[in-house]
Image (tube, rainbow, N blue to C red; front, side, top):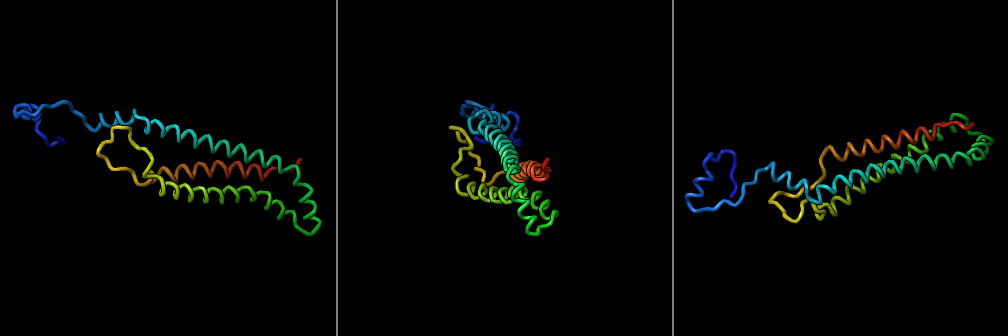
Length: 169
């Protein structure tokens, strides 16, 4: 039986007098605590940690690729300069190559993530074995996806601009 805040304070006594045996009393806060302690809720923290580590790994990989790429870039730049490419154009290309890749990958990754959620989000376990009568989520929170995407892309853009803007020594 579901009761709300408008139920009289002696409702349990009245129900017992009518022969209904009350075996438990669960409120919304108790249900929330119980669900927060189950596997799917705990796994959400793991997903957040895995996502953060993936972004840090991508930033490290981007720095490494830029460092390795920097060594062979001098001969290419000299050949392009000999063909008439201006120094400003070379600097602009060096500065924007990696950020353009980050933006393209960020937009593509966001699109793929939303498509995958649309295809499989209904099948992801949200609750444990004791499924309450609550509606399943259709989409992630309206602020969670853009905020996570913006933080990730901003971090990778900062790494990309730093990697692309370094001068040869």
